[in-house]
Length: 197
Image (tube, rainbow, N blue to C red; front, side, top):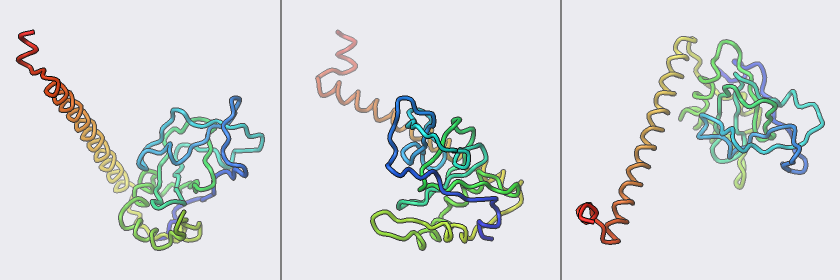
């Protein structure tokens, strides 16, 4: 079925007419592309803060919403879990409110799946900064299984991501250890020399 059938709404983020200008007395935090971790999590630290006097309620992020990055070469989705208070996104994001029949985590997963990404690449128009229009996005065809199946998929996806994270951390630790050993070897220090010293 089309995404339009399983969501309550999809609105573009806040329109910054003069760009995002951080302010020392900013009353609103802004989540940008650089603050999203591989479509699965958001970096809460160091969010830009701006001063906005307008009503930001339509653009305020809430748990259960899904963000879709409509611009760029990789149009990905991110399910929001307890986002920072009073936080908005620029207008190159679509803020999606799923219906109760679809889990936010599942919706983000299925949008990021190879099958959906292949569809999105066909409508991602533009060379320098490609964009998926809201009309094309809402026509994206996805599978929506029962909620219990969705929960299983989300759980498996989270386990897979955690495994990848641990694998990356282990690889980074190995690289540091090897570099340390190589530096010692290059300087003429070996384990045996160190013991004798």
